[in-house]
Length: 423
Image (cartoon, rainbow, N blue to C red):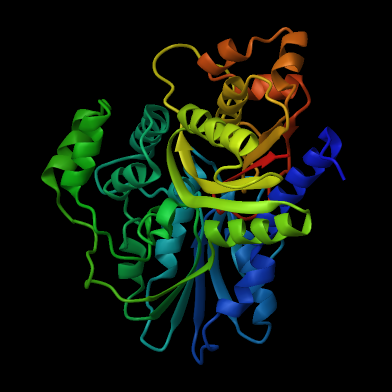
């Protein structure tokens, strides 16, 4: 059967949905649970998947008395029987982010060695749980968070700074849980699945320092208030380091697990999958240009794989906004627009990219689909693709031609997945 537009579009959406399903807490969490506790079990958590993880835990342990609090993004709450769910803002924290973080710390009071703490951690937790360090306030964290989002810093760099402005991140929640037994169940949304980076590592030791945070602030030229600069310079109350805290950390879903499921699905669709990696980083538009070159090589030379094939990748690109005006966009749609511009209407190439949490950037768009006639349809809609790319206005373009992908909250988050189909 030939690959036409309808077949290619359906295949790409099937691949994306398969990647999201591979990280569904309702399907995977129970397999990673420790033996049931004999004493109290306190549940805390933060992230876009925190509420559905809490509900999945309640379903898996109906005979265990569970108490606790988790914080998730607005619109991501699900019904729970015993565990309190608080909704807060993402990607910039709000008053509920601070309230939720304080409640998590309060849950750690009075624990004994007979108690168990289960921490449910997923992407987005850095913004959703934002308790400022002593001497700082929420407005400080909000301003610096916005600057970090706009400057092109990697997720690891962003979270290094966040840890050193926080009362809960960088292992501080784990320190507060002592002497209880701590088990963390985590969904990774970061390149390399680094435990200390996922949601800024509230339950694991932090290998970074105040000096690292100051260097990142300087590297990107971020202006911070004088009292924040003094806090970073004083370097008091350093985050817990390896050896300072103990706990059992278990990854229940990762970007590679999603890509592997997509690869399995691709084979059933008659496509040869090539997984290029789960930790690709860099500027979104540069990544799009690079991937266009690989797609052309497959189409023209059958290298590194003969068509029909699909190139699969994951990770987190960045978008550096600069000081000029910009439109509506996100890293996945900017990647796709750059890909389309470089392909320039090449036949036989389609692509999808999206954030597995259902939100690319600030808008309720998960991602988009690129087809051989994307640029032509954009022109017909009165949009110059190159101008849109320069103005970071990719959401507007894909919305105008009907190719934005909307999923709603998926209640999980293993970062971005991308699939380029070459017929």
